[in-house]
Amino acid sequence: MKQLTTTLALFGLATLGLMFTPSAKADEWNEKTIVTFNQPVEIPGRVLPAGTYVFKLLDSQADRNVVQIFNKDENHVYATILAIPDYRMEPKGKTVITFEERRAGAPEAIRAWFYPGRNYGEEFVYPKLKAVELAKANTEHVLSMPNELASAPKAQELKKAPVTAIEHSGNEVTLAQVHPPAASAPSTTMAQNTTPKELPHTASTLPFIGLFGLLSLGCAFVVRVARRRFA
Image (cartoon, rainbow, N blue to C red):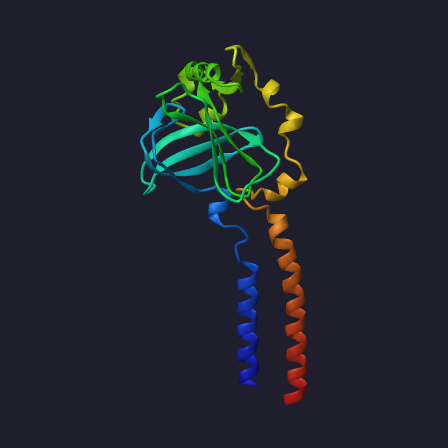
């Protein structure tokens, strides 16, 4: 009977372990990425020297995100950047960073960052003066925000910033003209590739509760049989 009790106790611990096993890794929801540049690169607000950096998604919303760039040891923040989701047809199995075209001798400016396995990425928003400069050197638009908000210290301030786009001609157009809502909305495939920042409680606990109930009934049956046997 003592052996049976020990077995049931171990079985119960295994069940609890199953119920509280995390279903997502931190590096997935914040998209932590370690990137090494062998030459200087430009980001909104500054130029990063050649070296190793850590990219993280600080906050995610339906229509705009906030990206933070750290040093290698993650104890210093170089930049907090507003970004708009940028979608593509085929996800890649490795990190992809795209760049804006620049004049000869100028550091390349990051256009967008794509986390491995995702078919959406983060298109960086540049201060208007820099956006105009970049757009005139490119055939594609460059996202723009007011110059005075480019150094906003808080993510909430950045997320409220009005965002437009600068075309190659230098004309300013609305964000909807370059990121139409219909085209920007994730498809079913995109949703499957997305790991939410905060796991939904209904999706994560109910199946385990049901499983726990079935396992409890099984335990009760074993105990009942054991009592009859040892009675």
